[in-house]
View 1 (cartoon, rainbow, N blue to C red):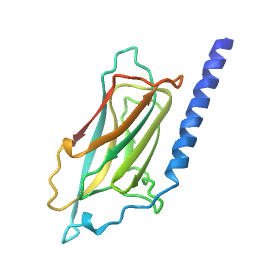
View 2 (cartoon, rainbow, N blue to C red):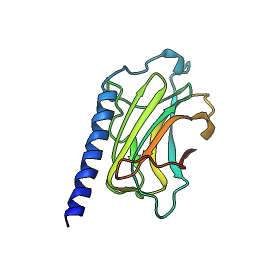
View 3 (cartoon, rainbow, N blue to C red):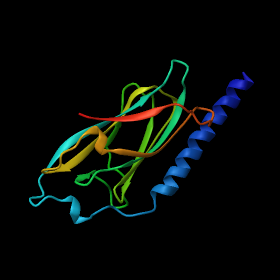
Amino acid sequence: MRKNIIIKIIRTTLWLALLSTFTACATRGTVDTSSSDKSATDTVTSRTLALTIQGTTPETVIGAIDVSIEMPPGVSVKTQENGMLISGVLISSPLSTQPYLMGKFSNRTLRIAMISPARIKGGEVMQLSMDVAKGVMLSAESFKISSMRVIDLNGKTVDGLNLSTALK
């Protein structure tokens, strides 16, 4: 019984530490408003980018994912003035139980934190809605994962996992 309480305290502490770290990072920077991303007619289409964790086993327990993605020119996401994504731009997959999602877009980089005190399962973990300027040709390879950290519910780094992208 006491062991379960200690585990819950550790999980809660981990979750709060990750949230605090990401929030501190997310309050810096500005929204990317460069005109180089706009087409001549400012016509955009909406696309969805799916993010999938690969390399998990039934024993893999993921508590949080912190990832930075370099977005290609001509692609933008809807943000608040401080660069934080607006509600609904980033959604979790039904496979992920009770996640907390936060994202910030600045200088062509999208940083995403996904935290779950329960567990994040492998497979598709989230989807991102984006605007693509007219004439921009995209593929899954257009989005570069510049950094990724996956940790378990005890705060330890989970090695051997990959994050892939797919356009929908």
